[in-house]
Amino acid sequence: MKLPMVWVFLMLSVFVIMFFVAAVSFQGMKSSLFQIIGFSGMIFSLLYGLLTTENDGDKERNKQEY
Image 1 (tube, rainbow, N blue to C red):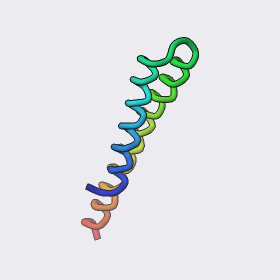
Image 2 (image 1 turned 135 degrees about the vertical axis):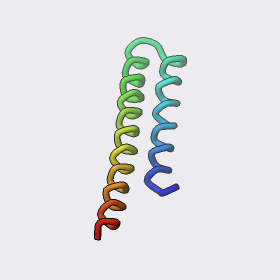
Image 3 (image 1 turned 180 degrees about the vertical axis):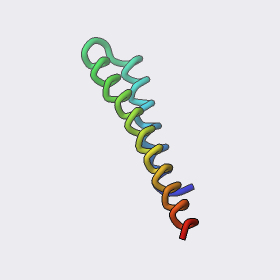
């Protein structure tokens, strides 16, 4: 496992925990705010992981061509 994927896993875990803690612990505006931040962070983490994976795949393909 490469280091960027470890960071993706850690970020995703933190944002998922933030999302569920906000849903259970807080009420009203605080809950909504933390859920929005948590959900946005989850999406960012997934897209970052996809970008990292695609970038590594492109590098491998370029090495094979030359």
